[in-house]
Image (tube, rainbow, N blue to C red; front, side):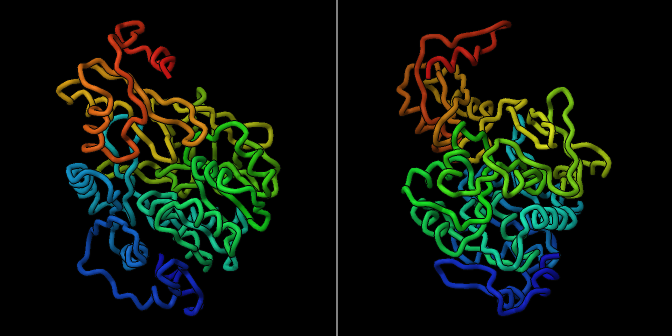
Length: 406
Protein backbone atom coordinates (compact mmCIF):
# COMPACT_ATOMS: atom_id res chain seq x y z
CA UNK A 1 0.00 0.00 0.00
CA UNK A 2 2.45 2.68 1.15
CA UNK A 3 5.03 1.71 -1.46
CA UNK A 4 2.45 2.02 -4.22
CA UNK A 5 1.38 5.45 -2.96
CA UNK A 6 4.98 6.66 -2.70
CA UNK A 7 5.84 5.32 -6.16
CA UNK A 8 2.89 7.17 -7.71
CA UNK A 9 4.36 10.61 -6.88
CA UNK A 10 7.32 12.42 -8.49
CA UNK A 11 10.55 11.20 -6.81
CA UNK A 12 11.78 14.79 -6.43
CA UNK A 13 8.66 15.87 -4.50
CA UNK A 14 9.23 16.62 -0.84
CA UNK A 15 7.64 14.25 1.64
CA UNK A 16 9.17 15.37 4.95
CA UNK A 17 10.49 18.74 6.11
CA UNK A 18 12.36 18.63 9.41
CA UNK A 19 15.23 20.24 11.27
CA UNK A 20 17.46 17.53 9.82
CA UNK A 21 16.60 18.61 6.26
CA UNK A 22 14.20 17.40 3.61
CA UNK A 23 13.26 13.86 2.61
CA UNK A 24 11.80 13.22 -0.84
CA UNK A 25 9.49 10.51 -2.07
CA UNK A 26 12.46 9.21 -4.04
CA UNK A 27 14.46 8.91 -0.81
CA UNK A 28 11.71 6.74 0.67
CA UNK A 29 11.69 4.51 -2.40
CA UNK A 30 15.45 4.08 -2.20
CA UNK A 31 15.31 2.85 1.40
CA UNK A 32 15.95 -0.91 1.57
CA UNK A 33 13.31 -3.12 3.19
CA UNK A 34 13.69 -3.96 6.90
CA UNK A 35 15.58 -7.08 7.83
CA UNK A 36 13.51 -10.20 8.33
CA UNK A 37 9.87 -11.02 7.60
CA UNK A 38 6.99 -11.00 10.04
CA UNK A 39 6.29 -8.64 12.90
CA UNK A 40 8.49 -5.61 13.63
CA UNK A 41 8.28 -3.59 16.85
CA UNK A 42 8.94 0.13 16.42
CA UNK A 43 9.38 2.69 19.19
CA UNK A 44 9.38 6.00 17.28
CA UNK A 45 12.08 8.43 18.35
CA UNK A 46 12.94 11.99 17.43
CA UNK A 47 14.95 11.34 14.27
CA UNK A 48 14.08 11.24 10.59
CA UNK A 49 15.20 7.62 10.67
CA UNK A 50 12.17 6.85 12.85
CA UNK A 51 9.85 8.41 10.29
CA UNK A 52 11.47 6.38 7.51
CA UNK A 53 10.87 3.17 9.49
CA UNK A 54 7.21 4.05 9.98
CA UNK A 55 6.88 4.35 6.20
CA UNK A 56 9.00 1.40 5.10
CA UNK A 57 8.13 -1.39 7.55
CA UNK A 58 4.46 -1.65 6.52
CA UNK A 59 5.39 -0.37 3.06
CA UNK A 60 7.34 -3.57 2.45
CA UNK A 61 4.59 -5.84 3.73
CA UNK A 62 5.84 -6.30 7.30
CA UNK A 63 3.45 -6.04 10.21
CA UNK A 64 4.43 -3.04 12.35
CA UNK A 65 3.77 -2.81 16.10
CA UNK A 66 4.01 0.70 17.52
CA UNK A 67 4.96 1.08 21.18
CA UNK A 68 5.24 4.30 23.18
CA UNK A 69 8.98 4.73 23.94
CA UNK A 70 8.20 6.50 27.27
CA UNK A 71 6.49 3.47 28.83
CA UNK A 72 8.13 1.41 31.59
CA UNK A 73 10.01 -1.66 30.33
CA UNK A 74 7.51 -4.07 31.89
CA UNK A 75 4.58 -2.48 30.03
CA UNK A 76 6.52 -2.49 26.76
CA UNK A 77 7.11 -6.22 27.19
CA UNK A 78 3.43 -6.82 27.95
CA UNK A 79 2.37 -4.96 24.80
CA UNK A 80 4.86 -6.85 22.68
CA UNK A 81 3.38 -10.10 23.99
CA UNK A 82 -0.15 -8.91 23.23
CA UNK A 83 0.87 -7.97 19.69
CA UNK A 84 2.49 -11.37 19.13
CA UNK A 85 -0.98 -12.91 19.25
CA UNK A 86 -1.80 -10.97 16.07
CA UNK A 87 1.33 -11.98 14.13
CA UNK A 88 -0.70 -14.13 11.75
CA UNK A 89 -3.83 -11.97 11.77
CA UNK A 90 -4.83 -9.37 9.21
CA UNK A 91 -3.03 -6.15 10.15
CA UNK A 92 -0.57 -3.75 8.58
CA UNK A 93 -0.09 -1.95 11.89
CA UNK A 94 -0.89 -2.59 15.53
CA UNK A 95 -1.32 0.45 17.74
CA UNK A 96 -2.28 0.49 21.40
CA UNK A 97 -5.07 2.31 23.14
CA UNK A 98 -5.95 2.50 26.81
CA UNK A 99 -9.46 1.19 26.08
CA UNK A 100 -12.23 1.71 28.57
CA UNK A 101 -10.96 -0.26 31.55
CA UNK A 102 -8.02 -2.52 32.25
CA UNK A 103 -4.86 -3.04 30.21
CA UNK A 104 -4.28 -1.41 26.83
CA UNK A 105 -5.47 -3.36 23.80
CA UNK A 106 -3.65 -3.79 20.52
CA UNK A 107 -5.73 -2.38 17.68
CA UNK A 108 -5.28 -4.08 14.31
CA UNK A 109 -5.43 -1.71 11.32
CA UNK A 110 -5.27 -3.17 7.84
CA UNK A 111 -4.05 -1.69 4.56
CA UNK A 112 -7.67 -1.30 3.46
CA UNK A 113 -8.46 0.55 6.70
CA UNK A 114 -5.64 3.04 6.09
CA UNK A 115 -6.56 3.47 2.42
CA UNK A 116 -10.21 4.17 3.24
CA UNK A 117 -9.21 6.63 5.96
CA UNK A 118 -6.79 8.51 3.71
CA UNK A 119 -9.29 8.67 0.85
CA UNK A 120 -12.10 9.95 3.10
CA UNK A 121 -9.94 12.57 4.80
CA UNK A 122 -8.61 13.88 1.48
CA UNK A 123 -12.13 14.25 0.10
CA UNK A 124 -13.46 15.96 3.25
CA UNK A 125 -10.59 18.44 3.62
CA UNK A 126 -9.74 18.84 -0.09
CA UNK A 127 -6.24 17.63 0.85
CA UNK A 128 -3.94 17.78 -2.21
CA UNK A 129 -0.28 17.51 -3.16
CA UNK A 130 0.03 21.28 -2.71
CA UNK A 131 -0.62 21.07 1.03
CA UNK A 132 1.85 20.94 3.92
CA UNK A 133 0.50 19.21 7.05
CA UNK A 134 2.15 20.08 10.36
CA UNK A 135 2.86 17.00 12.49
CA UNK A 136 3.64 17.80 16.12
CA UNK A 137 1.77 14.81 17.56
CA UNK A 138 3.51 11.68 18.92
CA UNK A 139 4.08 9.24 16.07
CA UNK A 140 3.25 6.19 18.20
CA UNK A 141 -0.32 7.54 18.35
CA UNK A 142 -2.76 7.13 15.50
CA UNK A 143 -3.17 10.92 15.32
CA UNK A 144 0.49 11.42 14.44
CA UNK A 145 0.96 8.35 12.25
CA UNK A 146 -2.15 9.12 10.22
CA UNK A 147 -0.71 12.49 9.12
CA UNK A 148 2.19 10.68 7.46
CA UNK A 149 -0.07 8.18 5.70
CA UNK A 150 -2.70 10.69 4.57
CA UNK A 151 0.01 12.90 3.11
CA UNK A 152 1.65 10.00 1.29
CA UNK A 153 -1.74 9.09 -0.21
CA UNK A 154 -2.10 12.48 -1.98
CA UNK A 155 1.61 13.22 -2.53
CA UNK A 156 1.71 16.13 -0.07
CA UNK A 157 4.43 17.26 2.33
CA UNK A 158 4.66 16.94 6.10
CA UNK A 159 6.45 19.49 8.25
CA UNK A 160 7.54 17.42 11.22
CA UNK A 161 8.40 18.52 14.74
CA UNK A 162 9.60 15.62 16.91
CA UNK A 163 7.95 17.20 19.95
CA UNK A 164 5.45 19.93 20.61
CA UNK A 165 7.18 23.28 21.04
CA UNK A 166 4.72 26.18 21.09
CA UNK A 167 7.12 28.69 19.52
CA UNK A 168 8.05 26.31 16.69
CA UNK A 169 4.42 25.32 16.08
CA UNK A 170 3.32 28.95 16.04
CA UNK A 171 6.08 29.84 13.56
CA UNK A 172 5.19 26.92 11.29
CA UNK A 173 1.52 27.86 11.33
CA UNK A 174 2.46 31.29 10.02
CA UNK A 175 4.77 29.80 7.37
CA UNK A 176 4.23 27.21 4.65
CA UNK A 177 1.89 24.96 6.64
CA UNK A 178 -1.71 24.70 5.39
CA UNK A 179 -3.18 21.95 7.62
CA UNK A 180 -2.56 21.38 11.33
CA UNK A 181 -3.66 18.70 13.82
CA UNK A 182 -3.76 19.76 17.47
CA UNK A 183 -5.24 18.50 20.71
CA UNK A 184 -7.12 21.21 22.65
CA UNK A 185 -4.20 21.71 25.04
CA UNK A 186 -1.87 22.49 22.13
CA UNK A 187 -4.33 24.95 20.60
CA UNK A 188 -4.73 26.68 23.95
CA UNK A 189 -0.97 27.14 24.22
CA UNK A 190 -0.65 28.48 20.68
CA UNK A 191 -3.37 31.06 21.32
CA UNK A 192 -1.69 32.09 24.57
CA UNK A 193 1.75 32.30 22.94
CA UNK A 194 1.19 35.47 20.91
CA UNK A 195 -1.47 37.79 19.52
CA UNK A 196 -0.83 37.06 15.84
CA UNK A 197 -3.43 36.19 13.24
CA UNK A 198 -3.32 32.84 11.44
CA UNK A 199 -5.33 33.59 8.33
CA UNK A 200 -3.40 31.59 5.72
CA UNK A 201 -4.32 28.16 7.08
CA UNK A 202 -6.71 25.81 5.32
CA UNK A 203 -7.75 23.70 8.31
CA UNK A 204 -6.86 23.30 11.99
CA UNK A 205 -8.16 19.93 13.19
CA UNK A 206 -8.88 19.96 16.93
CA UNK A 207 -9.54 16.61 18.58
CA UNK A 208 -8.25 13.98 20.96
CA UNK A 209 -10.21 15.18 23.98
CA UNK A 210 -12.88 17.51 25.34
CA UNK A 211 -12.73 21.00 23.80
CA UNK A 212 -13.15 23.67 26.50
CA UNK A 213 -16.01 26.13 25.88
CA UNK A 214 -14.94 29.25 24.02
CA UNK A 215 -11.76 27.76 22.53
CA UNK A 216 -13.13 27.32 19.01
CA UNK A 217 -14.57 30.85 18.96
CA UNK A 218 -11.27 32.30 20.16
CA UNK A 219 -9.38 30.44 17.43
CA UNK A 220 -11.74 31.69 14.73
CA UNK A 221 -11.37 35.25 16.00
CA UNK A 222 -7.62 34.89 15.36
CA UNK A 223 -8.20 33.65 11.82
CA UNK A 224 -7.75 29.93 12.53
CA UNK A 225 -10.24 27.66 10.73
CA UNK A 226 -10.55 25.46 13.84
CA UNK A 227 -12.51 22.28 13.01
CA UNK A 228 -13.63 19.98 15.84
CA UNK A 229 -12.60 16.44 14.92
CA UNK A 230 -13.61 13.06 16.30
CA UNK A 231 -11.85 9.73 16.01
CA UNK A 232 -9.86 7.09 17.85
CA UNK A 233 -7.29 4.36 17.30
CA UNK A 234 -9.92 1.86 16.21
CA UNK A 235 -11.05 4.20 13.41
CA UNK A 236 -7.65 5.20 11.95
CA UNK A 237 -8.10 8.54 13.76
CA UNK A 238 -10.41 11.04 12.03
CA UNK A 239 -13.94 9.82 11.24
CA UNK A 240 -15.77 13.14 11.66
CA UNK A 241 -14.64 16.73 11.19
CA UNK A 242 -16.57 19.98 10.95
CA UNK A 243 -16.84 20.88 7.28
CA UNK A 244 -14.22 23.46 6.21
CA UNK A 245 -15.75 26.90 5.74
CA UNK A 246 -18.27 26.38 8.54
CA UNK A 247 -18.39 28.95 11.33
CA UNK A 248 -17.34 28.11 14.90
CA UNK A 249 -19.22 25.05 16.13
CA UNK A 250 -18.57 22.15 18.50
CA UNK A 251 -19.79 19.42 16.16
CA UNK A 252 -18.20 17.29 13.44
CA UNK A 253 -19.60 15.99 10.15
CA UNK A 254 -18.98 12.31 9.35
CA UNK A 255 -16.40 11.70 6.63
CA UNK A 256 -17.44 10.06 3.34
CA UNK A 257 -18.13 6.36 3.89
CA UNK A 258 -18.72 6.69 7.64
CA UNK A 259 -22.11 5.85 9.12
CA UNK A 260 -23.07 7.15 12.57
CA UNK A 261 -25.96 6.16 14.77
CA UNK A 262 -26.79 6.86 18.41
CA UNK A 263 -28.17 4.07 20.60
CA UNK A 264 -28.99 5.00 24.20
CA UNK A 265 -26.71 8.04 23.76
CA UNK A 266 -23.76 5.78 22.81
CA UNK A 267 -22.00 6.57 19.52
CA UNK A 268 -21.93 3.65 17.05
CA UNK A 269 -19.80 3.78 13.90
CA UNK A 270 -19.56 1.73 10.72
CA UNK A 271 -17.27 2.07 7.72
CA UNK A 272 -14.29 0.70 5.80
CA UNK A 273 -11.69 2.48 7.92
CA UNK A 274 -12.73 0.87 11.20
CA UNK A 275 -10.46 -1.83 12.64
CA UNK A 276 -11.50 -5.47 12.14
CA UNK A 277 -10.67 -6.16 15.79
CA UNK A 278 -8.09 -6.33 18.55
CA UNK A 279 -4.93 -8.40 18.66
CA UNK A 280 -5.73 -12.05 19.29
CA UNK A 281 -9.49 -11.56 18.96
CA UNK A 282 -11.70 -12.67 16.03
CA UNK A 283 -12.52 -10.26 13.24
CA UNK A 284 -15.72 -8.28 13.39
CA UNK A 285 -18.18 -8.69 10.56
CA UNK A 286 -17.83 -5.81 8.04
CA UNK A 287 -21.52 -5.03 8.63
CA UNK A 288 -21.15 -4.91 12.41
CA UNK A 289 -21.42 -1.56 14.20
CA UNK A 290 -18.45 -0.50 16.32
CA UNK A 291 -19.68 0.68 19.73
CA UNK A 292 -17.48 3.52 20.96
CA UNK A 293 -16.91 4.50 24.59
CA UNK A 294 -18.43 7.93 23.89
CA UNK A 295 -21.87 9.47 24.23
CA UNK A 296 -23.17 11.85 21.61
CA UNK A 297 -26.03 13.35 19.62
CA UNK A 298 -26.51 13.98 15.90
CA UNK A 299 -28.00 17.37 15.03
CA UNK A 300 -30.33 18.38 12.20
CA UNK A 301 -27.61 18.65 9.54
CA UNK A 302 -26.07 15.30 10.43
CA UNK A 303 -23.18 16.66 12.52
CA UNK A 304 -22.01 14.64 15.50
CA UNK A 305 -21.61 16.31 18.87
CA UNK A 306 -19.74 14.35 21.54
CA UNK A 307 -21.24 14.95 24.97
CA UNK A 308 -19.02 12.83 27.18
CA UNK A 309 -17.49 9.46 27.90
CA UNK A 310 -19.55 6.42 28.73
CA UNK A 311 -16.66 5.09 30.82
CA UNK A 312 -14.21 6.58 33.28
CA UNK A 313 -11.42 7.38 30.85
CA UNK A 314 -9.83 10.79 31.42
CA UNK A 315 -8.52 12.44 28.25
CA UNK A 316 -5.75 14.84 29.28
CA UNK A 317 -3.71 16.70 26.71
CA UNK A 318 -4.83 14.22 24.05
CA UNK A 319 -3.77 11.15 26.07
CA UNK A 320 -6.27 8.53 27.30
CA UNK A 321 -5.77 7.64 30.96
CA UNK A 322 -7.58 4.86 32.80
CA UNK A 323 -7.98 6.07 36.43
CA UNK A 324 -8.48 2.48 37.61
CA UNK A 325 -5.06 1.48 36.31
CA UNK A 326 -3.42 4.46 38.02
CA UNK A 327 -5.27 3.77 41.28
CA UNK A 328 -3.99 0.19 41.23
CA UNK A 329 -0.40 1.46 41.01
CA UNK A 330 -0.75 4.15 43.69
CA UNK A 331 -2.24 1.80 46.23
CA UNK A 332 0.89 -0.39 46.04
CA UNK A 333 2.80 2.42 47.77
CA UNK A 334 3.47 1.14 51.31
CA UNK A 335 2.15 4.40 52.77
CA UNK A 336 -1.13 4.50 50.80
CA UNK A 337 -4.27 2.63 51.85
CA UNK A 338 -7.01 3.92 49.54
CA UNK A 339 -7.14 6.06 46.42
CA UNK A 340 -9.88 7.66 44.33
CA UNK A 341 -9.03 9.48 41.09
CA UNK A 342 -11.23 11.59 38.82
CA UNK A 343 -10.93 13.89 35.84
CA UNK A 344 -11.79 17.56 36.23
CA UNK A 345 -12.20 20.19 33.53
CA UNK A 346 -9.05 22.16 32.81
CA UNK A 347 -8.54 25.23 30.59
CA UNK A 348 -5.21 24.00 29.25
CA UNK A 349 -5.40 20.20 29.33
CA UNK A 350 -9.11 19.67 28.57
CA UNK A 351 -9.18 17.44 31.64
CA UNK A 352 -6.61 16.79 34.34
CA UNK A 353 -6.27 13.69 36.50
CA UNK A 354 -6.56 14.48 40.21
CA UNK A 355 -7.51 12.56 43.33
CA UNK A 356 -7.51 11.92 47.03
CA UNK A 357 -5.90 9.20 49.09
CA UNK A 358 -5.78 7.89 52.63
CA UNK A 359 -2.28 7.26 53.99
CA UNK A 360 0.60 8.52 56.11
CA UNK A 361 2.87 9.88 53.35
CA UNK A 362 3.04 13.26 51.63
CA UNK A 363 1.61 13.76 48.12
CA UNK A 364 5.10 14.38 46.70
CA UNK A 365 6.10 10.84 47.70
CA UNK A 366 3.02 9.32 46.06
CA UNK A 367 3.59 11.25 42.82
CA UNK A 368 7.25 10.17 42.77
CA UNK A 369 6.12 6.55 43.17
CA UNK A 370 3.75 6.99 40.25
CA UNK A 371 6.43 8.64 38.09
CA UNK A 372 8.64 5.57 38.40
CA UNK A 373 5.88 3.17 37.34
CA UNK A 374 3.65 5.01 34.89
CA UNK A 375 3.87 7.02 31.69
CA UNK A 376 4.31 10.77 32.37
CA UNK A 377 0.76 11.61 31.27
CA UNK A 378 -0.69 9.03 33.72
CA UNK A 379 0.80 10.67 36.83
CA UNK A 380 -1.95 12.60 38.70
CA UNK A 381 -1.42 16.34 38.43
CA UNK A 382 -2.69 16.91 41.95
CA UNK A 383 -3.18 14.65 44.96
CA UNK A 384 -4.66 15.46 48.35
CA UNK A 385 -4.41 13.41 51.52
CA UNK A 386 -7.71 12.93 53.34
CA UNK A 387 -8.82 11.13 56.48
CA UNK A 388 -11.57 9.27 54.63
CA UNK A 389 -12.58 8.92 51.01
CA UNK A 390 -16.22 9.94 50.53
CA UNK A 391 -18.46 7.03 49.56
CA UNK A 392 -21.77 6.61 47.80
CA UNK A 393 -24.19 3.70 47.75
CA UNK A 394 -22.63 0.28 48.24
CA UNK A 395 -19.48 1.77 49.74
CA UNK A 396 -18.06 2.78 46.36
CA UNK A 397 -16.12 6.07 46.12
CA UNK A 398 -18.37 9.08 45.55
CA UNK A 399 -16.47 10.57 42.63
CA UNK A 400 -18.62 13.68 42.45
CA UNK A 401 -17.70 14.36 46.08
CA UNK A 402 -14.03 13.77 45.23
CA UNK A 403 -14.27 16.46 42.52
CA UNK A 404 -15.51 18.90 45.16
CA UNK A 405 -11.99 18.86 46.66
CA UNK A 406 -10.60 20.52 43.52
